Image (cartoon, rainbow, N blue to C red; front, side, top):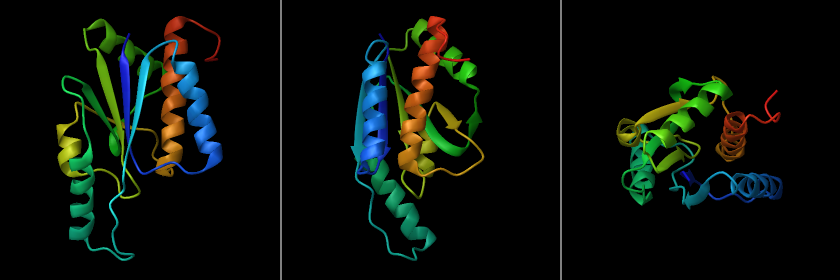
Length: 158
């Protein structure tokens, strides 16, 4: 069974998002071991300089404990956009190639450090549109669940 790690910058507080994460966590329990880790977002001034943002992103990356031998997928705007079917194929290929863990990383409101992106094995973009990073967590969990449903041949994905 594949372990799916989700490292997220920032803590979920909104009840509706917590409920959605809880629902997909429950659903995914039948298909994978899901581990969600929240990393505190580094405080920056209201009008930060580029150097302050870079330092904050590096600080957030330093707090992340990425499991060794895990395939790492950074969610970022310059990542590759995949269809739900393509994500399903990719997750299945990881599992069948002997990879036991995949780690998805969702940055905070300022994104991810350049160092983390270059360290990642894969970069994934959810859309050309911009979404709040807390909503991206729910969207990613739904897509991972959908991928498992596609691979199981269910009617969830129509």
